[in-house]
Amino acid sequence: MFFLNFALVLTGYVFLSYILRLPVGKLAKFGLLALAFLAAGRLMIMRYIFGGLGGIEASRWLLLVTSFLQGIIIMLFLLSFFRDVIWLLSFLIGKGIGKNLRVWLNGTTVALAMLVLAVILDLTGLYGAAKIPQVKNSEVVVKDWPMALDGFRVAILADMHISRFFDRGWVTGVVERTMAEKPDLILMPGDMVDGETVLREPDVAPLADLKAPFGIFACVGNHEYISDLKPWLPVFEKLGIKVLYNAHEVVWPRGIPIIIAGVADPTAESPRYKMPGPNLPLALEGAPEGPPVVLLDHRPGRARTNVEDPRVKLQLSGHTHGGMMPFLALMVKRANGGFLKGFYNLGDLKLFVHPGVGLWPGFPIRILNPSEITLLTIKAPKVATLSDPRPVSHIPG
Image (cartoon, rainbow, N blue to C red):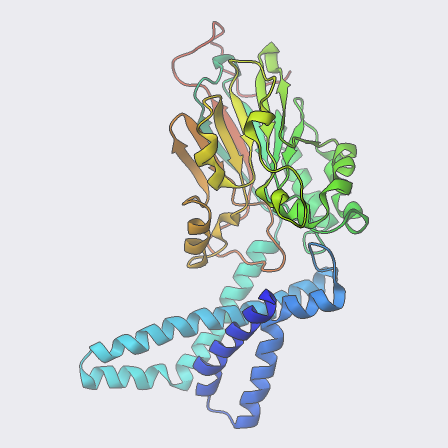
């Protein structure tokens, strides 16, 4: 029902605000209306035809083409809204200039320019979403981080959304770029897959080539539940990925303990799944006192709760996809507790919201918001807390 309502709202506004103003006949206008509805209803139509739990099981090329058509309608919706706002504001201007502005806004030149701009924005956004992301180097100072581990390098792969859209070839490229950096640790803050195991195993297979001296750890995101989580857990284990479901592991670079913890996603508690939800006390039960905790929690908004545990010094999250594009980013930020992407300070807790390696293929678009493979270098505070003061740029073991 959501997808139908989405298509109706999108199509209705584009028809009333854009198509009806075009200098073409009634038959052409209703033909364009039908095409607009088919494009706006892409998700509804393709899920009905191709199905797929958590994803659309069509070919990547078909997904790209239909995403492009859907994107044009979305861009025309936004551009038409922007034009209508200017049209309304024109009434505040003097009658002569304001009237001329309204006539110009309703003209063929503006309509054509809007279509060209919609195509350019759509192609830019689709390319930004579909490409294999570059590695971005970032640094963060973490409270109580041991000086002996200054320079510890962590590769972060959030929101891969491995699917028919982000398929085996794309995953191979992500793995190759990640491994070229030789990280000490690899962490995945959820939404790794879209689709059931029987459909996705060939696409996730390249993840087996991920290697790091101190392990590969993940937490689950909401899309793991949509994709039927329980059969996925042994698959992740086979690939060498340790899923921390309200659990923790202690890693020992240079013989110094660091705690990696992960919690479940709140989606687990819905009546559909009836699984244990996020539980930080359970995740840290039995953990040694003293070492800093690096927490994997898919939802950044939960940092406001997690900060209450003083052991958690760094939280790594995803879920927002960086907001995907301007305007939409404002809504995404509001829906995620004021967090969108990058670093945030909450007392002694550092929160990093990853913009995503991939994103949900139902709406694949990125404008002014590139995807990335994050290589995070963790720095110790300037005042050392351990006797070994030697900084290192890489932890070999």
